[in-house]
Image (cartoon, rainbow, N blue to C red; front, side):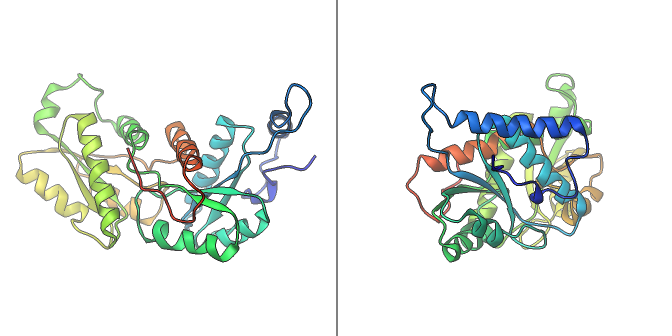
Length: 290
């Protein structure tokens, strides 16, 4: 039996215990059995899901991306899930695509807005590979992304809904994102900020670590000028890294952790995969939607 998700994609050896080995075998067996009908006929395998991460020199980012991939596999064991990086980390996206051969795929960017990587780099890599593939919308904006942002804020110390009425009068949040010169990217970040504000019941201002204004300190000053003094920084980053660390340092009260491998993020990746399958095959990313 050939594994659909080859172990060489994993950082280090994940098969470090008998329990993990048995779980891996069970996952592969479930995937193979799902391709057989009750009458013993073989079903057509669904397109491979390729999660496309940016890549980072921070080992924590690599670990986070692999954990998210594993969570996606747990939610849908019958689906072959691969990983490719745009830069800095292996496997690089061109190598992942080359390994697919003639197998169709759906690429889901683990990115949060329609920046240049989503609009240009990923479609260009698909076109150069010759792979029959669809490129899904990025993960944001979407209510499942906001669900994760909310959960991370609660973990950091944000009071649960209804527990602190005064916070609605004095609280505020800066949504810290990577930033991009692409207008669609900044529009997506603003949309996510509005969705989070609706969820929290306090003002949420978008801010950027680079390439776009306002910066996190500038957004914090704006909220302070409006009489908001209980201020949090919500990390709108997929994984830990330099930007997330720098933005968190500016938090006057609490700063949430990056989105990471939260279950809602895995469900969101699968939602984008399913959404892309409903559209005609293309290397152009679908418009992000909420």
